[in-house]
Length: 215
Image 1 (cartoon, rainbow, N blue to C red):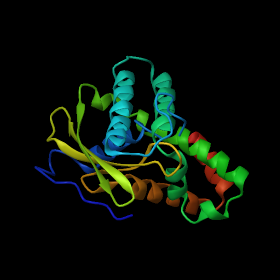
Image 2: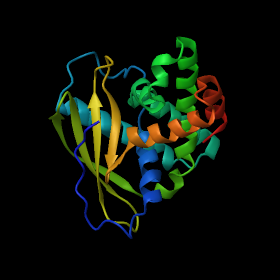
Image 3: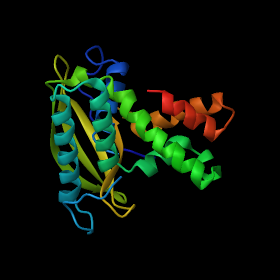
Image 4: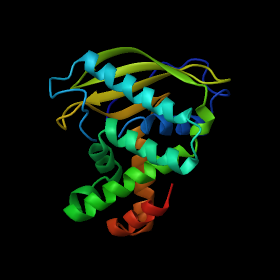
């Protein structure tokens, strides 16, 4: 997917690649596909795209600052992920060509396992972001979707510009990708899942079993 690379300021020694991936995970779980009860079906606009991101971030920070045990936090992050992001699109992108070859039951099982995997994988790093904040700054049309920009202020690190891609092609307003300092969520997950699938010789069922235990 072609994307606009965010502005890079004071890059580098302050924020490592591992830091970026951890923060990417935090944002990913701010979102992934149930109907938002507070919004009827409608044509997506910049205001709606921006509201989606504001709402997802609000819920994420409520969980981060709740002081709950890790297992409960992971479950809530998975639920937020399912509520605001297009899990189906992200899961299919991560699986790649194998998604077209998998049977419907196999894909549904994989998708559910992928959702739980994301919640656990990134939930383990959430404590690193207590006290941080993200401000949504703009929303604009980009190709067939909307790009919502925001600035992340992390403790002891330079501010980062974060871009969210929001669409309603699934019938509901959902975000389907995040770009942070050139780190593309779809590409990152595609590489991770692709490597896991390769270790299982392309067996989606075996990959699903691995995802149920991973993260």
